[in-house]
Image 1 (cartoon, rainbow, N blue to C red):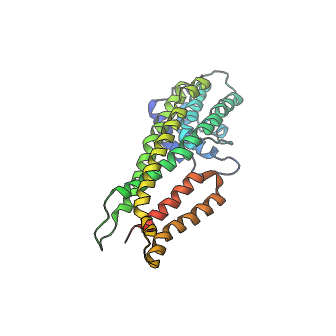
Image 2: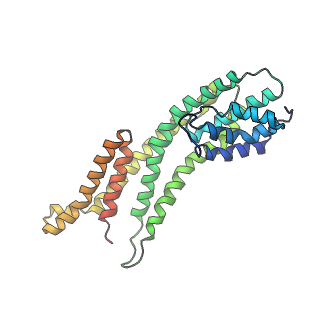
Image 3: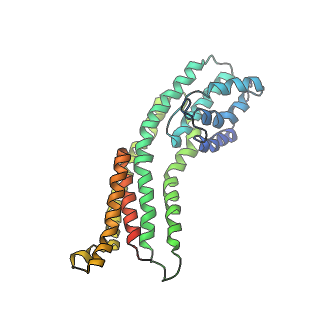
Length: 271
């Protein structure tokens, strides 16, 4: 064991490694391997001897599951408890596991609605809207707007997710002795409500762009049969995608609807 405290650089390395938390998921341990990999810089600081470090690492390779964006809070708390244990405090394995579980389950329950059900569809929606607001290329030129969609999606998603990832380890380390206070201090519900309203506004804007690009009015005005078929085709394809997606994944109907509308708009854009 070592009396050397964990340094800020160690916590920064733990935070950077937490980005790979799900790189080695297994049905038996879920994120357990990634958790041990992320925590290893702190364990090496606390347990210089290879045998002691290996024993500490094995304690954190068991089953672990939480939302990956919020896993840093659990990593920080575990690092702090290991630091106290290395300093000689009588902290048992069960106490560390209990703290990990006390944080992991609520963070998963709060993180899924925020990041998966709200932020991810909104980020994708913003990427599609970014294509719609830019003018189309000249005839014969490549449509470089398609490169903008994934860039805007990643930028919008990580603008919210990265601060939680990068600050989580330090916050969890500082509040390891007060997991209930830590959970109450996180503005996850407030972020979810704000992003839900932003998503509703963006969805309305997307429907407006879709109505313009699909040119449904051509059907009402009584265009030629070929024109009617061309105007209806994107709507039919979008409906088929939505129906198949909702049947396969009923819990992700919002994302499926956005995917279907996006496909319909892209099919309707003249090439």
